Image 1 (cartoon, rainbow, N blue to C red):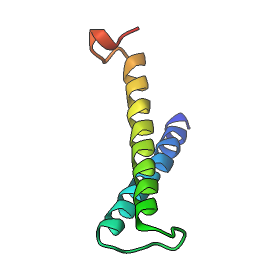
Image 2: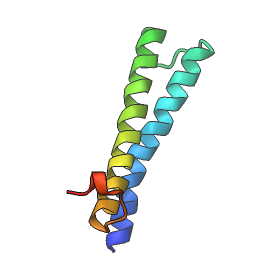
Image 3: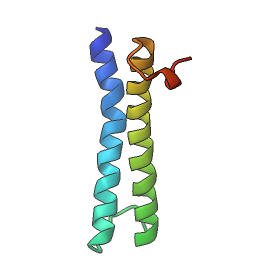
Image 4: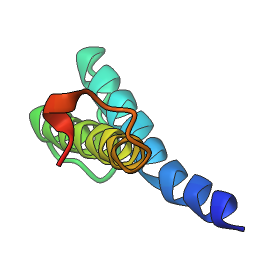
Length: 77
């Protein structure tokens, strides 16, 4: 049960990161999505989604590895 919950917790930021990549790609090709009035705003929101999602997943993995002592000595508490 814990693994399923962890998977769900990781899927939501992963989907947000993928959405961020899509928004940034669409801005590159000049495709304006519905809720955004400007291309530059669409790119910034996509960048925030991508960095936020990637940072959450990376932090989750780093926290898990730190608990299992799978990190370098400089990252240990």
